[in-house]
Length: 589
Ligand code: DON
Image 1 (cartoon, rainbow, N blue to C red):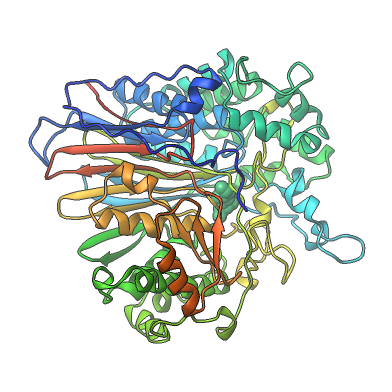
Image 2: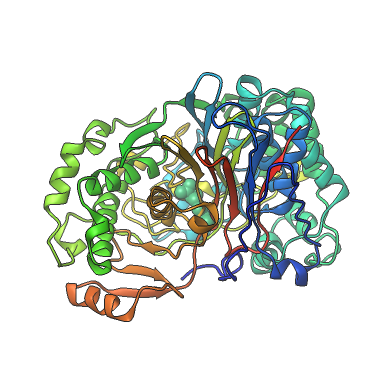
């Protein structure tokens, strides 16, 4: 069911607690054999008083080189936002299968000085000339090729505008400084991860359709090797244009002209006006209280925060702890089922659709949903008014940062499916996303994640497609966590499970390692991650209640940082299912 490239189950990470003055210098040789044996979890203890100043920062990302780029930027006097810019752009170079300049992101920022939480919407948007006909075959059936491959699949990118906005408004360093590590990685090269090499090999047929994709991903005529050096001078030059001219370096001038020329030549519809009109938007996050914790999470155009809020509101008065495991899973799954039913029905770009958010986020609405849960019996999704959903794919990336001053960033970034549209826009080196598929492009037809949206998520020029990305903060009296993960529709249930684990007292390593459970309304089955320690009699009991249980391959690639202020302890962990990630806590001077 899931892409195994980044997701094979790995041994659980080693846990350590380290005093703050000890550096954790986890060095991982780049050679594949060594990389494959590693997964990293770092702990460090602050020796400073709680809640005032600290000396350590924590970063967890899906690639060791990106985590190091973040620390490099902190060491130059940057804050969490500057580090996030370095991490995001480095991931664009070293993990292009998951996210990049040609894609978009959703991010939460916490500003320690003002206590303010805010949300940056850098989601891609449809070009003005979008037309349903471009995604249909001559016989009227959906054309899955144009929705997923090549320039018609690509929305106008959001990442460059979002990063420039964040640098300007919330960063301490000039954008040009935060872009340095990514420019260096692009120009000097790096050892590609096994996941990148396998992604390129798997997408070879699509990549070889386009000359610029071929020269970027098959530099010597063949796919790169983990032991070789992979460079990306085209992207390096585009990053330099951004270093000089900010967002205009990407959306206006030579880079924009080159991208539009390449897109048009390959049958796409982008115009210079589409690029010039793109703007990142700052929005108010969704906030709710659950079990004494404040949950801060993603608003539309993400569906994730609304769905997580609905699930938590449904569970709020239920005493999960006193239940046996089968009943606990029963209530979790029924909350997931009900939230997912609403997910596709109502939500879309808030600038285009009116959404009943007051209703969806209301505890009274949740009361009604809870009352429809049958004690000890699975509700059939078919009994509830239905939209259909199928298996998720597996690319996109999430990273979490807390700097020494308590500023925080939770960012999930994506080009949608592996290597996005497979289309590199000429000499810009920018690999374009295939995010148009996240719209309900053809009425009634499922997208790559099986999501069937309604008119709220129909494609319209200038509109942003609905996302499941759910960057979140969980803030308690003494402990807080920065949480998120990739995984299409499973993002929502991963974040839900991580919030519950954190509230249960788990640290970053335990949260990322926790086995996952997923239900998304349709298909009407419970995915339980292989290797889960749920006992056979509990599974039998669930089957007796009427659940179809699916023993599913691993999914997700979560990166979490936790700050336990009462114990002066920061933990950072990258998902043990991903051998390339790095969670690290280190002193910053
Ligand atoms: O925004 C979304 O919901 C999707 N484009 C995310 C795709 C994703 O997570 C792919 N899988 N890892």
